[in-house]
Structures are given as C-alpha cells and as structure tokens.
Image (cartoon, rainbow, N blue to C red):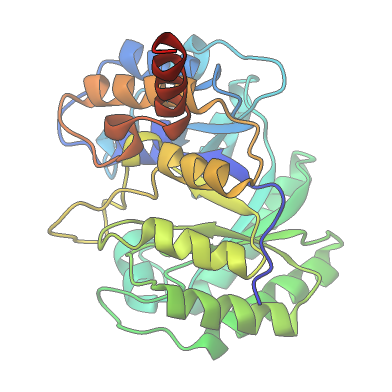
Length: 325
C-alpha cells in the first residue's frame, strides 16, 4: 500500500544548480530576473546561487551580485550552496540569505575525489570542521544530505548498507555536537535511481530510522525523474528538490546527455492532478519556466511548460460548451 502525503514541499534549485552547468555566460541581470519571477509562484524556498570556487565553477563567479540584486518576498526562504568554510563566510557576509546548517557526505569515494578531492574519511573530517564553523557563527544545524546514493558513474551501484552507515555517522555527530537531525536528503546525483531502487533505499532508511524526515534530490537524465518522485511519494517522502523547466545537473558527473533535475512544474502538475497540495501557482510557474528557457538561450526539457496545465484546457472546454448552448 502507498503512503502518499497530503502536502509536498518543493525546494527550487534552478537558479543555482541550473546555471552552474550552462556552458555560455549568462548575464547576472537575467539570473536575478528568473529568481524574482520564481518568487511570485508560491514556492517556499529558492536556492539562488553557489559560493564555490570561480575556477571550479565559473558560472557562479557573480554570486555576491546575484544576492545583492534579487528582491526578497515575504514568506520565501532564499538559500545558497557552499562546500567549505570560505563559502559559508561569503554567504553570511551578504546579510540577505537564510542561513541554515546542512551537512553533506558522499556515498561514492571515486566521485568524491573528483568533486572535492577528498576520501570518505576526509569527508567526515570536513563535516566535523563545518560543524565547528556553524557553531562559531551560531548557525543552527538540522539537515544533512548524502550524494550519489543510488549509484555512481565512476563506482557503480552503491550498497544500501553504506547509506545506513552514513546516516548513523550523522546521528553520532549530532549526539557529539548537540544538534537534532530533522531532515535527510538522499541525492540521486548521477541519475542512477529507478522506482525500484527508490523503494529499496527509502524503505531501508525508514525501517531503521522511522522518525527521520526524508527528502529526495532527483535528476532526469534517463527520464526517470517524475517516476522516481512518485515512487518516493508512495514511500511517504514529502520534500523534493526540483529545478524550473528541468534546468541543472552536476558539472562533475560526466554525462553525455541531458542531465537536468526533476522539473518543478512537471512535479507540481503531477501533485495537482493527484490532489496533493504544494501551495504553488502552476500557471505562474509555467511562466517562470518559459522565462528560464529564454535566459539560458536554448530548449529545456520540461514537459508541462510546453503542453500547459489541464486546468487551462478544462476551462477552455467549459467556456466552449457554455458558448454553444
């Protein structure tokens, strides 16, 4: 039996993860325009940029200008990504972002070496260092994530036992440093997940850690994004990362094809048709998706942005029938 949630929270990552993989330079003003458009859709959280090395990800070199330029809307949390102490300090210095502590481990050592030049053991030590940094700046910690949970282009399938061990590491760290782990994000960084593996991993985690709230970060490289999201919902997952118009991907994953995240408006559409609340205005979100395509200057993989919502068609049919009577 499924355990579908009544309400789903969608955390928008398009302005950050979407832009980091684009090859051509995108004007800062257009990035800000997209963020401001997304702010009007009912999204509760938008990740606006990334404070990482401009040498590693040159598309994020304008992070301070982006944060300075967008308009905050009441009720919306604006976040950013960082990978180390320096990135956190830069994010805090903006005095405009909603800073929350999130810890990250990676399930694939080969990917970790490519992405951050660290071993699994060094990754845990880096997390300890980040905890110290959060404490120094009085930043609350309540969230953690594991990357490459469902498989890796460089290491292959990841044992579920390793994921459970990493979760226990987070719990050990929370006990050691006196914080409560409330949400764990399971990231399909390189799009290895299928509905079967989603059920397998999420089921194992829920069996061992039933009180832990789970979130899914899904990619759509093989067209499994929405199917995987549905499988997650059947397992009771109610928090999802997504990217407007299907923007995004990991610049270190070495994909030959499209590698965007699960598409926000497609996910909202599915929820809407299933009677699951999101609090998001789908029509406004479609407008943001069309804008995102203009901003990057090439077609994006979102489906609902092209086909439109069924509510719009239902209204047209209703108006047509009324006019003919």
